[in-house]
Length: 104
Image 1 (cartoon, rainbow, N blue to C red):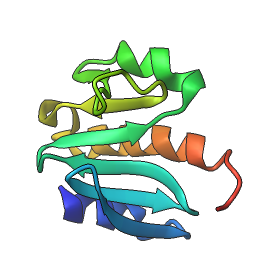
Image 2: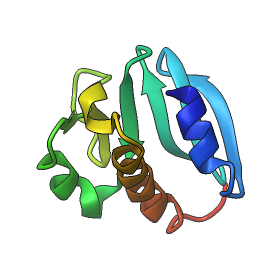
Image 3: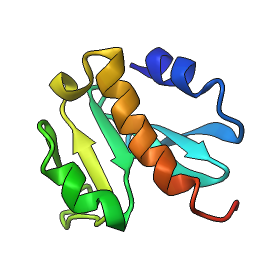
Image 4: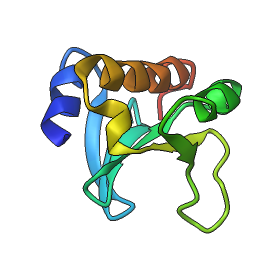
């Protein structure tokens, strides 16, 4: 999965990768974008405006890393990003949000 995300994001400027949440986190202009958690789940920062819509999508659920849901952040089960089109959909949702944020 890491290579698939890296390949997709190679055309996007301002991408860095950090170890976080027991996995990898892809940052966009210093803001958390998406990541790999427990080597199998995709974490995506969709932001507050897209949050409810994202949760209604198949294979998505609240990100509850701290025991409480983090509004604007979701987990996607592996079945939800098997295809390139599905992975692209999730990353684009994340980019839509991070593009609206100021650079850190």
